[in-house]
Length: 191
Image (cartoon, rainbow, N blue to C red; front, side):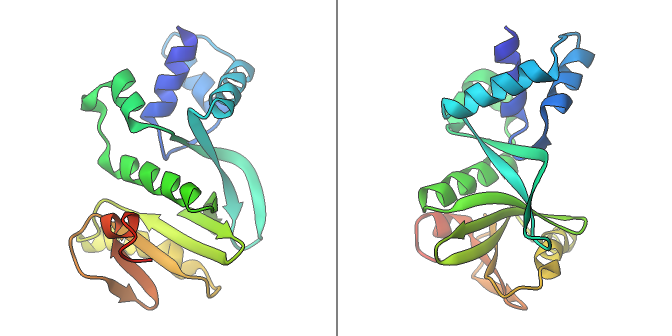
């Protein structure tokens, strides 16, 4: 039962920073006592069986990997629906999960970027270089657009920067940061 509860918790928090301690503290506060070492073993087993994929954090400025708060993405959204039901639908995080899996499929090593106080959804690296991605369901609201642009604008290198959304708008650029439709990107209609 506890194994299933931990899996449900991870499935319910795709795309959110998590640690084994955070999961164990939350479960314990809900009346399900479990220690962080057990949670760590469960997460390792889920990863080794390819149920979840951990995305490590990467400090973009310092060019170093960070140990704290990985994000987890799941191999199959259908499994999430099976465990949580459709009422737990979070389309933005599901889109983020789909983009993560596609980046892996395209041969990238994928990390969660950290620059100053901002987070970049994905730092995708391969032998050709690095690409930064932000993923949002929509950026038609100006505040949301600015929130998604800020982390990419803080990066001072010259690697490509992309915002993927489900907005049905033509491609737009903001000082070199491309905003493109996620569906077109997934279908390979744009790079």
